[in-house]
Length: 235
Image: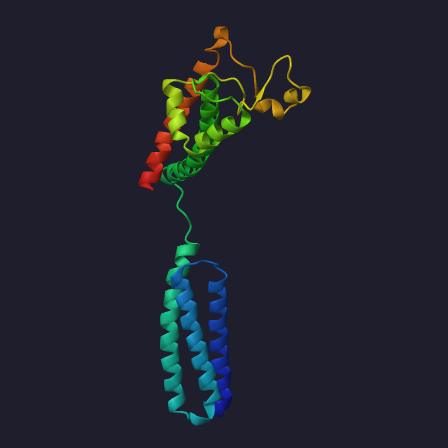
């Protein structure tokens, strides 16, 4: 049988195997540079195979086996690299007490930072805006100032939360005290949702109502902030 006939069959079969390897690697959908490099190297061999197929008429029974041997040596090296990469993705994870504890720790670490940030910003917003209710400042108490303090309290939440531990303000509104609620207030102030931002002005008799609850919450969140900062520092 002529080299051009059997050679085309052999080289086409090798090319098909390489294309299958490329597809298998592309299905990993990873940003691993080793995978991308290997795919690129496989494609170089595919080009060599196409070139060899186009030059089959120049080979004879002596030179063609040498060409196949050279290509197979290169392909075997690439296949070895592929097996090493696939081991990383196909290896079964060993389940043990240590691995379970490690997974739990990772989950707690990831979600604790997020939850602490959300709760800390909310509490910082509450503390900073409520501080303005009884603060001795020569300004008119209006919604603009309450929003101003609420925004910066949320952005700088560790500071107002720590302040809430030492000297918590009176907790009057569920969130930000934007609207005063009294006998002369419009009816919409009590609408669910809006009521989260309405408050009853304090009197000397209830000056300390809600302070201790807010202090306890600030203490708890301060502890979470400390743990979260440790996680961020240690990575």
